[in-house]
Length: 390
Image 1: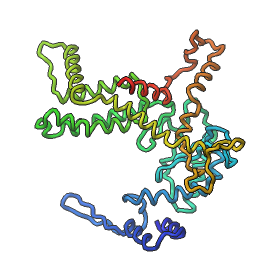
Image 2: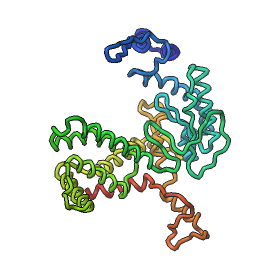
Image 3: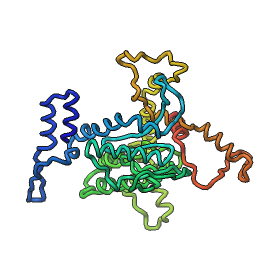
């Protein structure tokens, strides 16, 4: 904490503001209550980067300053989406690292390159800022089909999926773990809210409003980055009908078969949803399109500043302009969406199937085992088609 305040002071931040930050972070009184008992936590000089609203802002200083100092070293092993040279005479569209406060992620075409950059960053944080990387947080994920070469450093664990800010990312590009996590969160919120103590005193409309406030946010949060498909949309509609039928309390008749009872309960839930609400699958499609707009934000203007050096863009502003695009402000997510698009996949499919024993007349038979995951590009086209039908 003192090193961060010193770093800010060396860059012109006022002493009064630094003292206020130190007082807020280190000398705040914390009272822990255990029923009738209370305990006062003493003043602390370490661990000041957690537990407050300033923690995120202050925690970014060691990480971002280290990225700036190590940028040239990290760039050598960075992942390259293209080999185009921009107007800075540098290979553009290279992604070396990403961060969210104190969460660090490194990218490379090889395992050795990613782990070398991670170890370089860990050594810099340890030597300059006296910050240690947790030993159990060092994980490696290689895309399915990739090769694992030399691992730089010790303590690394090879995983098939990793947690990135609450979302499990799978090595095969699937979203089964995200879907299962969404189901657990949705049912947990349903039984905790819509079936809490005294739920019978609430009317059906209030229970439906409670369902929309407690369960639907979890679904939209986890499925926003998951490509919408017709099969999964039907599964999501079935989940909504199941929860609504529980709220409606549709009971089985004495002589009614289970098949007819389930069909009647589903029809009742469907009719109620159409009259008093909307399908969660519709919100899923809308969320996909909004997430796409977020990923594509300001891409054209930033792309103009990264034109090849041999043919500079006429739209690129001069470096003296106050609104000129900076070298570090490239929206890399939009570039990744254009990396190896569906046309490239089709060409690779043709090459792999050419002359193979599994070649089919239409050229669509898969040459290897494993499920073909839904691509984001194809899912967004499907979502746009559905939006026109809604």
